[in-house]
Image (cartoon, rainbow over all chains, first blue to last red; front, side, top):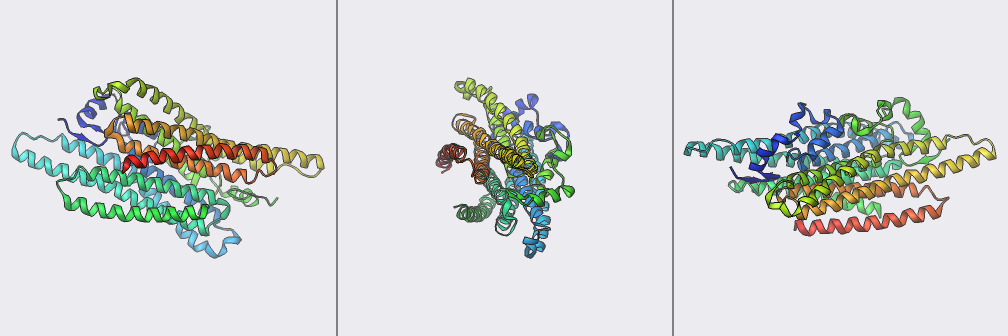
Amino acid sequence: MDVDWRGSGLSGVARATVYCTTFWGLGVSKLTEEKFSAVMDSIASCSPAPGGGTAAALAGVMAASLVEMVTNLTLGRKKYAAVQDEMTALAREVRELRGALGELAAEDARAYEEVMDAYKLPKASGEEQARREVAIEKALHRAAQVPLRTAEAALAVMERAEIVSVRGNQNAATDAAVAHLLGSASVKGALMNVVVNLQTLNSRPEWAQLLSEQCANIAAREQELTRLMLIRQN
Amino acid sequence: MDVDWRGSGLSGVARATVYCTTFWGLGVSKLTEEKFSAVMDSIASCSPAPGGGTAAALAGVMAASLVEMVTNLTLGRKKYAAVQDEMTALAREVRELRGALGELAAEDARAYEEVMDAYKLPKASGEEQARREVAIEKALHRAAQVPLRTAEAALAVMERAEIVSVRGNQNAATDAAVAHLLGSASVKGALMNVVVNLQTLNSRPEWAQLLSEQCANIAAREQELTRLMLIRQN
């Protein structure tokens, strides 16, 4: 087996796992329930998963947490009486987005391992080869869909960072702006991970086409939101 | 007491702490040794610290972890024999930067609390007022210096993300690019936090001047590194 896919030559990965600390080696079911430093260790290790896709999702988790903080600093303040209901709804929404992005962070690493497993399927007979091809296609499609969902969720966080920047507690404007920056890094990083998987999905141009269009729409909105933030900063 | 500083009106904060979960309430000495979700909870809470400064530093921690992963995926590979020593040195450097940024994440929240404490000092007599003024100045200066050091460390991570993008394992190019994005968000977010503190440090224009110049240099290099990444992406 000598297939190159994403993070590393797969043959190299298979060899490397013996010496690597992976997230899964930690034996936890939920990445965000692990120590912050342990999550970073598993990213830093020589295992390609968790990698950039997971880190992008975790940046989205941080952005969502910051937006929630700004809603919390706005709630219960007389000066912001007019936006109390809106802030309550926003707080609930970003809490949900935070949970979803935390799940996607772990799913990204899992999706990568499924691609590796698909490549390891037997290919002695024609039937085995056909079954392996289908498994690889499906796994790659999923590995592209997970970061696409990350990008969508992180974009939703950015939309809310924009709202709290404008109508939330103005003393927390810097926190809202940092949420914006982290949301943007999350969207862009996730989209890069969709693209890198699409490049390998060349046997299914119709899937690749659809995913590309979705990426373009998200990228356009991300740019628009970043433009709005920059206008406010200057 | 009715001073407005950064995250929230201080009087509001003092009241709010009763209902708030702060990082310090968790009773841990090192933020990165806490659960990922607990760190996010303490950011999301209605306490203004930890906030954007801490989140910016933590984004730098993630960027450093990703750069380290790319060095680990480059080490021991024949194809990259020529850069083995360089990657070994880079791995050590980003591990140190990761540690430093983790400390700065916690220091940022502490520096904020020191500013709050300074504002709470007695101001009945002229002598007390003078002592309080000096304490506030010093605390604000430190609250600006911590994110400045964060920006410097995150910029150092970006420099190394650039190197591994060019000379590290090319199968991990997306991971290096995500490190770049997170490093950039960390630098920019930290610089915003320096600026917001400088605005309050108006009694010491000479300090503000020096810090402003340092910020401008960091911002210029960050833009240059981002430009290099974008050229490579297109």
